[in-house]
Image (cartoon, rainbow, N blue to C red; front, top):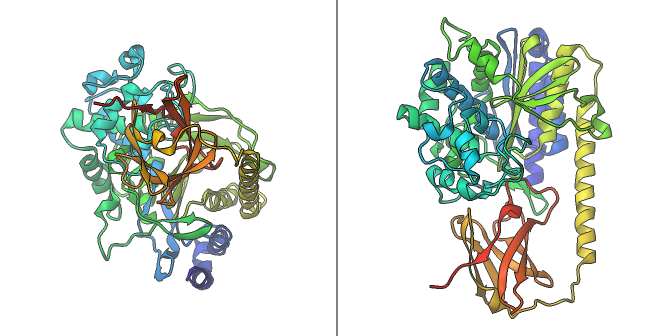
Length: 524
């Protein structure tokens, strides 16, 4: 079924490319855009995509490619909704910007004054943290710290997640380092109901979607119903691309729950490039001053040398602003963001001095697919010599996967496979607690051990002995990254604690197992 669906998709692209070649050429987009998208999708094994290009205030391209779901010929079009993940963050900052314009808050208001009960691990940080700090990834928290509170979907509410921030130990000092996080963006979104009495969800619908006419967007995939125009998520599971369940992101909404389409995001890009002014009428969503603030550097990012195939992407600077990342490419400043949730990745990029915006949405987890298209489009408008970005990004992907496989092979070969646990299996069973996550239970089932994250229904895994007192959690839901679980013993042979770490070097940072410290719960 997989092979048949991909073959149908490739044939579909050829027909679309022939039909739209003249149209693309006439409006200034790359003449080979459709065939280039088809090639990228085939190379990276992506079932469906949508692309939008805005140039000089006009929507040059807004169209879909491929299929919404493997095995189903229903095509993607410009109105098909995709999960946009962290591209949601710019919507959250824009919503806050409207409140700054109205004088209802300031970027530099202390969070505790706007969100009663807000507490971080360090009392100084609790007092000094501002709304601006929530948006700039410089809190001192570690990369993705606490993401297991919402990913995979948990039973915790937004309010419960915010409460748990007080138990998360910092990885660095306040405002000293960049480390991407989601929980503080969710916290920033919750300032909106605290100030207005309107939920983040309704505020986005009423104050952004409605004024822009974004009628093919929503804030939750739980709102999808039969017959709606939406793409399905896809991921490689045990080596095979397949449809996976939608991940419910409602409890992290302001950090990444929006679903949108190429047509709607083209309107969003028009607004951004027009500095908050509506493209089709007088008035604005936010002022030009707020636009400047949202695009102003706040946190300096390290600039690393890209791998050789991508040497042309080396930047001279990189920063994080308010919901947007900043960097340069061939002398132009780029303002953009990526987004990733289970089964979807996306890219929104603005080039203010060229009055250019690009959106690429995908229903598979392949960043090389959207980036190869993005830079092909940028090179066209920058009048640069052509680069085969598809080959370049595929080369990087192949290298990363080869290196990860080799690291896992070496780990497998080096383990003491004939070693045995220090204790009988039943001694490892029990309830463990982590200061911020809460209860995690290990119990015996048949002849083995099973681990469950009590507030995350899909996190049920079989503990397979690895070596000594380390086991591997092999999750029954195979979209979840496997993890090592290592037990530490007290001198008397009882269990003191357990630590966890992702097995694969390519595991997404939101599987932040390393931040857990599991302690046996006190027996009542």
